[in-house]
Every structure is written in structure tokens, then in C-alpha cells.
Image 1 (cartoon, rainbow, N blue to C red):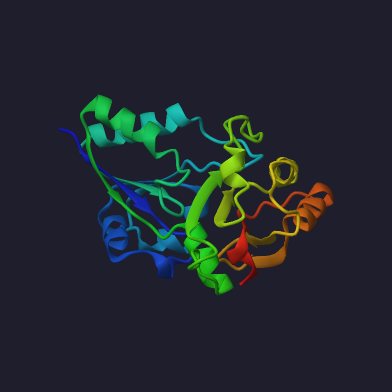
Image 2: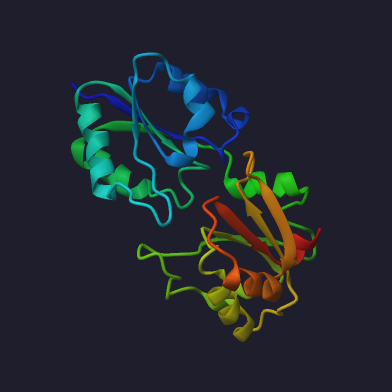
Length: 240
């Protein structure tokens, strides 16, 4: 007998941003495999007796291999359990969702995907800015700040990312933004383009810094590493 897997986006960390459907699945789950950023108060919705398994990945820390996480999902579901795979933000945005879906498809296990509040949307809301703006920011783009090796991806579309008429959000880019900024400026993005760094959005560690692409790049070259999840916005809208 096969169970069922619910991929639940937990949002950026504030349990009040969970959807009603997300809370329902957490309450009915037999097992919850959760990311580090989805822990804490969010797990208080899980019923007593359910298995709680941390499978979170954090930059610079020892983390479970992706194939191990996928195997756990399959193994739990094959016992007939209702499994929640709890991911931070929205599971479809830089959440390694596809690898886990492939494993479930191969094992013949049914699933559903419950969207969560994307971290970029929560950060923009906390900063009091829109993500698009008529006439000056008609396009929105999300990009990851590192690849599987932890380094800046080598195949970035720099022409698109250097478009000052777009709102660009860099996920997980704290360690690589200084390098990225050099490439962006070389590709034509003005160094004085407004930038906003949002750390620990909706948590007690939340902090927002308004700057420019050039100034933020210079700061991050010398600033000590910070464990808080970080988003970097740049473009016309970051200066709102």
C-alpha cells in the first residue's frame, strides 16, 4: 500500500503566513520531513506522535544528500503513511522540488503541491515596496546566487540580469553578490542602481539594508558571513 506526499510551502518563517491547506496537511501528517527554515513554531501544527525528520540544507553546513532525502520520502510513503515534505518559502522556487518529484514518479507514489508565500514576496511586503512598477519595472526575475558547488553559476544570462528596467531578486546570493556585481556592471548595469538586502525575513533576525549595487558589493566583500537567509533586490523598484 502506498501513501501520499504533500509538498507544503511554509513561507519565509512566520507561522501566520501558512495557508489553511498547509496547516491542515501538517495536522493530518504521519511524518514530516522539514527544512531548517521551516522548523520552530511552524512545527507546532504537527500532531503528537508524528515523525519529525530534519532534512534541511543550509549554506556552509553539513546537509543530507538530495538522493537521501528523496529516498526517505519514498520509503515513508511506501508504508502507507501521509507524508508532508515541508519546504521554506514556495517549494517551486529554488527548493529542489523536481528531484523529489522524479523519485515519487518512479516509485508510483501520488502527491500534491501546496504553494507557500515566496520569500521574495514577503521581503518586498516587509519593505513596503511592490515587485513590479508601471513604466519602470514591468518585469520580475528570480535568480539563484550559487550552483550546486556553492559558487556563482557560470551560465547566467548577464544581459537579462543587467536590465535596470527589471526587478531582480537574487536568492542565496550573499557570498557571491560581490562577484556578480562586477559582472553586472561590466554588462552595463549602473553601479548606482538601487539595491535592497533583506535578511531573515519575517523572523526575529529580520534586517533590511538599502544601498546601491556597487556599495552593497563593496560591503559584502569585507563583511563576515551571516547565517541568516538573505535575498538581494536590485532595480528601479528597490529604491521605493
